[in-house]
Amino acid sequence: MVGLAVLGFLVNGAAVLRMRGGRTLNERILTWHFVEDVLGWAAVLVVSVVMVLWSIPALDPAISVLITVYALWNVVRHLRRTLSVLLQGGCPKT
Image 1 (cartoon, rainbow, N blue to C red):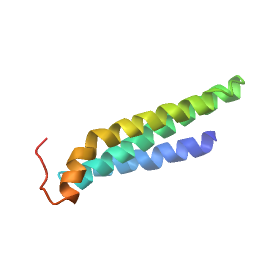
Image 2: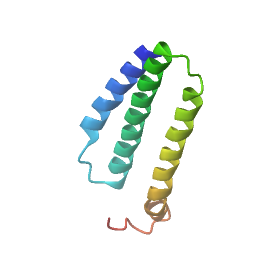
Image 3: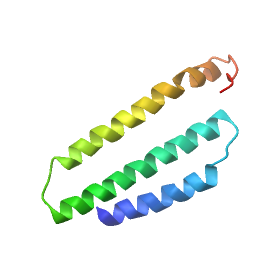
């Protein structure tokens, strides 16, 4: 789990660095998705190291719930702009 977390962190971190500074709505939302992935892999890395040192099995579902709540919060935050584009209403200024 530790190795997979390091690999996921590095790959998604490289994607964030490549996508930063995007101008279109699609590029910005994709960058946020990669940032969420990086944060998720960082959390998995921390929890896996803690679980190697101490046996605290409740950390795994707890971190899963926190990552899900954070991702859902970002979805709700970007929903209005995305729906506007999908309904061909143009992209509102941010």
